[in-house]
Structure formats: structure tokens, C-alpha cells
Image 1 (tube, rainbow, N blue to C red):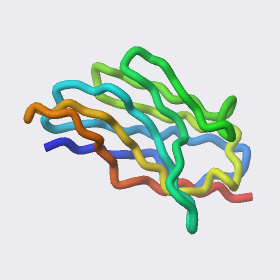
Image 2 (spheres, rainbow, N blue to C red):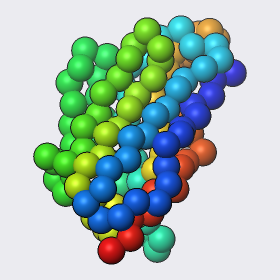
Image 3 (tube, rainbow, N blue to C red):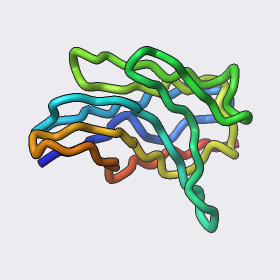
Image 4 (tube, rainbow, N blue to C red):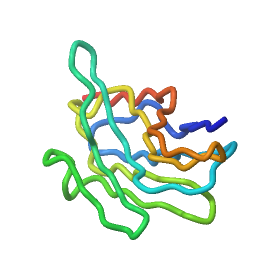
Length: 120
């Protein structure tokens, strides 16, 4: 069984910073894509940033230049450094990863989410 566990969410003032972490654990044999998505109240879940195992990154336009995604392959961990945050960044942030388990089978996995609130 594979689990993704997020941490690092919280309350921050506009212009401030937060760093999210997500660790993949359990029967993990390999990880390809890892990323972060977010869902604000009344809105659909949207992509924030992704990174491949080779380090290629992709960002949603509104976070470019403010957010940085990175990963530590040895620790099966992905991070999201969020700077110059805006009230519009308020959402539940979800970790996502495409993982090869010991089944063996490649599947998409999701964390349970961590709340990020930016006050104006």
C-alpha cells in the first residue's frame, strides 16, 4: 500500500511564504511524476506545479515566479516553496504522484490535502 502525506500548510499573511512537503511511503518501487494541485472553495481542483523524475518542471501561470517545486528522489519527497503569497492562493493543497508499487503496477496517488490560508 502506498501513502502520500502532506505537511506544512497553515495561515500566512499576504506577501509571506510557506513550504509544503509531501512524502511517499509504503510499497514504493519507483516514482515518475510528482506534483501539487489545489482546490479553493467552490472551484475545481487545479494543477499548481509538477516535476518529473528527471527534474522537468511545469507551473500554472499564476504561480510562475512565486512558487518553486523541487524533489528529493532519495527521500521520495516533493516540496513546494511558496513566496509572495496572495489571498487567491488560499486553498486545500493536494500532493499527487505517479508511483510504481510492489504489485507491480503504475498508479496515480493522492494525499489527503493540507489547508493553506492567505490573509489580506
